Length: 86
Image: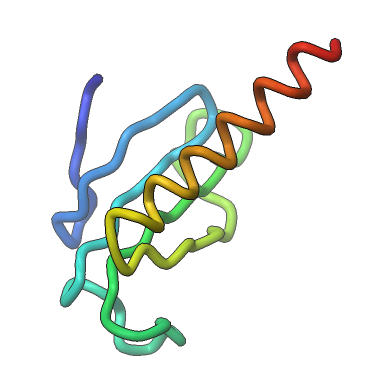
């Protein structure tokens, strides 16, 4: 896995046309409406072409390891059910 870092030092990975960024506590943009003191997982899609421009993001609060595992479990479960059905 090739982990890169954005301009604020947040680690991210690219998966096809998606960028998944881990936003650490204390590195968040003060102008956003962040929920509490927690980490975030940001998911964005790249716009077409090779410009590197990104669409608006979805940001998921991760206050603890349990919430991170819950997110992974839900995604895995959804994929398992739907891929099995197809």
